Image 1 (tube, rainbow, N blue to C red):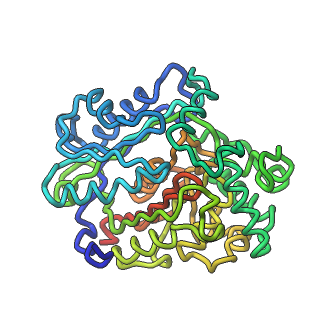
Image 2 (cartoon, rainbow, N blue to C red):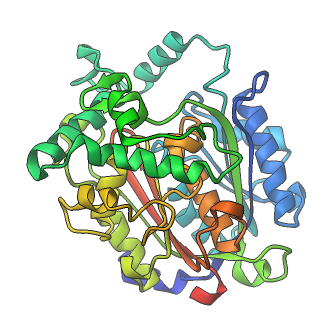
Length: 393
């Protein structure tokens, strides 16, 4: 199926409800507790009940049969299930199969949901890490016990610095911009002032990335509800239409990445733009998976907001901060809002809130289009979504 053959899906599906729960610290809640609370809130936000939900998309790092557990816990009679697990991009990648299921009539309302108690969980972190390695052995890297995933992103950052002259100050500018957005968001986990100098002087974790170049470790649940566009227009909240969607995977291990400075977002983004009939110039806001500061620079380049190698200069000039030409990660992103293990669903939720005009102090003006970039593994999986208000149809 070619990208052009998907143009008929443009705007046929809409996100009708979104919600988060327990983001930051949620002691006493399990992954399922956080997911279930977010799911119920998202369904209510859509003006529906759980009995209306007949499709489920979800994924977990630790449970291979997680979708069945979610269906059981929420009491859903599911006619469509997608348990695709490709890391943090999963919940952006879930859009396309959900759209196809809705378009075909297989189901009528799809719940995409996630929860992680990674910050306050009583599970032994060493045991969890060992379990993850058993499920995802990566034979060419794990035997050397690198500090994953951080060291993989540090490798990409080092290569970008070597090839294009990107500086640590430019990487730090990404973290500073994210913090400036977070200071406008009462739900952000870290809201203290942050300067380039403070990022540079913070603890080095994996050269050239410091602890402030790295995402937070938080709890949180998130969910959104997809329905067909005609039904969404009769529901309480303004519909946010799915205009484009694309997913691409080029490798798993960072040592197998063809070019450390080019991600598969170049392909997933091109597919999403083609389906939407749009380009980067048409995007009002960008919600980019910023697990580390290098991510934002790579995605700005690969999604066409600037040329390859110019991402550092782009962020250094304040383009992505409040008041800049391109609002990026308006909630504070994974660097300052929070990062409950897999962030893609939260980037999607923030885009919906911006397009609805629900951003409060952080609202990025009249936003009618948004690009969401999900990332999974070690720059391994990329999924791009283009969302729009009714004005963008």
